Amino acid sequence: MEFNVLKGRVSDIDAFAHIIFCNKDGVCLGDHSNLQELLQPFVDGGEFGTKFGGNLYAIAPASLSVKRLLFFNLGDKPTNDSYRKASASALKLLREKNVTHVSLSLSGLDPSARRAVVEGVVLGDYQFNNLRSETDQLPKSLEHFSVHVGPASEPEVVRWFKIAQGTLRARDLCQYPANIMDPTAMAQQAQRWGEQFGFKTEVLNKPQLEELNMGALLSVAQGSQRPPHLIVMDYQPASPSGKTFVFVGKAVTFDSGGLSLKPANAMAEMKGDMGGGAAVIGLMTVLRDSSCNHRVVGLVPAVENMPSGSATRPSDVVTSMSGITVEINNTDAEGRLILADALTYAARYQPDYVVDFATLTGACLVALGPKVFGVMGNDQKLVDEILTAGQEVDEIFWQLPLVDDYNEMLKSQVADIANVAGSRWGGTITAGLFLQKFAKDYKWAHCDIAATIFEKPDAYRPAGGTGTGVRMAMAMLDRMT
Ligand code: BES
Ligand code: MN
Ligand code: ZN
Image (cartoon, rainbow, N blue to C red; front, side, top):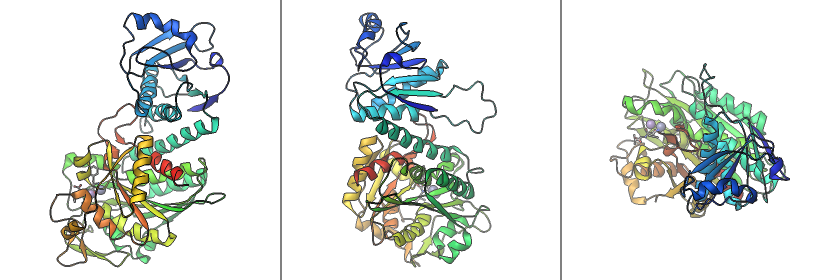
């Protein structure tokens, strides 16, 4: 998609179709008053309606350089998320008409609504067609998108656009199936993007992980033919003035459950079990271009969890890098094992803050549903920053308590700790408590983004991995400068 930011007059916009948002009464927002008369008969006749999504596609007057106008009703009391959905939905209408040169104006919108509109276009236009060979019948993607900035500043708009594109990179990583996007492919993609987007990448291989005594991570990978990696990414700002953040992302490129095998109907979507790692890699790709002033390290433990003759057996005991011994009673609780060693490794950066993203528990989906993410941590201020940053960009996080008494449930008969609780209750919290044992000596928060694996698409999120975390993390980094 070619992206343009326009100043000057709306009448000179060079696009095929121009999107105009209207309030529930059919009044065009921004400096479109001269076009109101075109829409008004349809408002008066009731065809435009008063609800979100009502629209009119019309021939533009000859005085404009655009050829078509799409009037789109925002409905009553639009929120930022309705703006995001509105631009995504308007775009979808145009896409069905094979329109690929689109513009819209941000005038008349407040700053957070302007941001949401730009995001809606980028996120809503996303399609993953890299693995299709017959592409001529597919809906076209946008070729040119122009925003008329109105009162917004150009760099501001470009920045939102780039951050949204980072989300699309995370999505791509998730959409690829596990026979293609295995740990090595993920590491290679991180390396390529590191060169392109200004961060250093170091990929640790199995012998190095052995050298580091990452027994917990290695135990997950040992049933797979595909070797594990720890992907280490490092962004140093040109003039550092902020803090040191480490982001850790779970990347199980396929989670079969291991010998504690998942049922067939719950397995295919587990190609998306690297969504946490995808979010961290996606975030790394936007730091330089959004002039982040923090040092940011991304750690992505990448493994495949498979059953085989060399796989971990339920009841095996392994020694993690921290020295803590773990009894693996269920090989399907593998995410916490790879995160444990990555969290121990994180300490070497003496970080001010560590945040992990992980598709960690089905229990989180049961508790919070498909659009809300769990967060817990050992520092309330950090958790609060995540909650607020999430609100800013409509990635909704909800705090769960790390109840000390529940540590009881993680006791092992033979080792320091068991990887699963004896009961199903509070499964998201007990997973968080497990991680807390390894998140030592720094402020830490854990984001359970199991809900990033989406069953059905919506206006601006595809089925499969949605790329959740990139926009929230960037908003959090911005808040904490
Ligand atoms: N990757 C899964 C969690 C998951 C499930 C994410 C569904 C998204 C959608 C994780 O590795 C897992 O299997 N967790 C187990 C933990 C249990 C064995 C304690 C679960 O949630 O059942
Ligand atoms: Mn699992
Ligand atoms: Zn998993």
